[in-house]
Image (cartoon, rainbow, N blue to C red):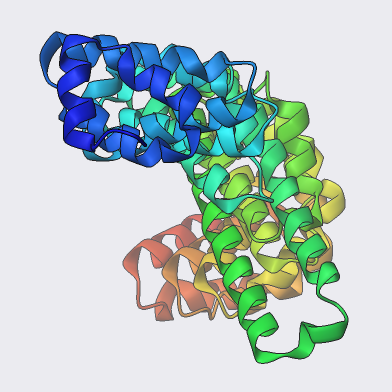
Length: 405
């Protein structure tokens, strides 16, 4: 630059457009322009920031890059300086140039973290940042999405389909990057460390996406049906990985407050009960158990064909899996007692489980099944179980079975 920063700052105070014009002459000095931009005070800075933002649509990509970097540099230090140019930054997210999108996204993120309401302007363009191939872009996009969800949950609703699509893209990106490094120096320590860091970063972003989806859907259950196709696709996609279990759990959380919003996903959840990922199957069983409290018959119909895999989790190491399995089988037995007949032995074994919730649910399921062959075990529960609630449940069940004899 031909002028020292303090000279340019003094001139910008008199002629606010000077900084923007300097980008056309010295676009590669954009960081210095951004630092100078922050130093301008009062109304002159407002005008100067707006003039730089106007360069985001310049025909010359180098100028656009410079403008985006200048704004990013300025807003990193003084985000309050950019509240008036959020729409221009949002539009820059659709720029064909990756560097422009990166700088504009980072600048907009700093604005959103300072004032979440400014992020609303970016909702339509925000999916452009959901690029797993560029962790910086993706991270900035998720920061902005979180700010939108915090300030206006309704404004975040249109982002849910894109967020769910990104889950698959995150997995594809990880697989692609591993494939790119499959030969040559891929076995070197540096390559292995790069893969490890890349996978860890994508894992963090995946967890953030799931958290955002969870936050949005639990805040606005009525939108579940509108995003159901892409949600179900994510639930079925093994490439989404551990996020599938979290998504199934999200449906259970929604069902706790608005079961009707989740009712249409009953068959989809039931289809996950024999998933080879035990965490997915367990989360689906738990969600169906929540849903069965108000939609018992519908859940029983859907689970009827999956009773065997559900019963297998009665012997799981994880307490949550055993509780989810026993609870769901109790609901199924209430509406379809014949369906649990093949797993009576497993339920009888569960009477000795260390968890009282598992034992109580097993008692209820056996009672609904009305199988006299387990009366001896149930009578023993009425006397020997250490939990009074379980003993009381068993007494009720035994009395009912004996009265039906």
